[in-house]
Length: 71
Image (cartoon, rainbow, N blue to C red; front, side, top):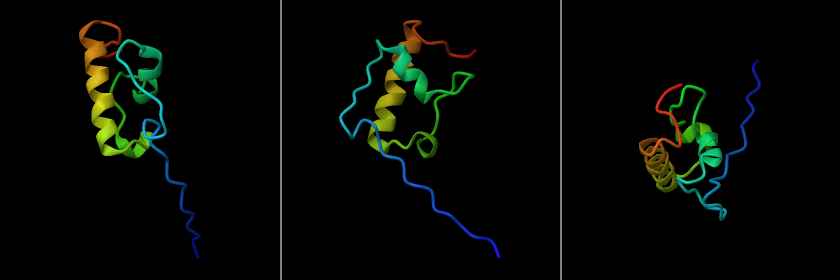
C-alpha cells in the first residue's frame, strides 16, 4: 500500500512583496535552468500573472545581453 504525501504549495515570491527587474540578472537566474530556459510555474511556484512578468523581464535582459539565450 503506497502512502501519498502532499507537497506544500509554493508561494509566489512576487505576491509576497519581492520585485523582479531586468537589470538584476542574479535574481532572474533563479527562474531559469542551467541551459537558459525559463522554468515553468509548477517548478517556481509563481502565480500566472507574475510568471508572465518574470518571462517578460528575462526576455528584456536577454535582448540587452545581461542574460544568455542559451548556455
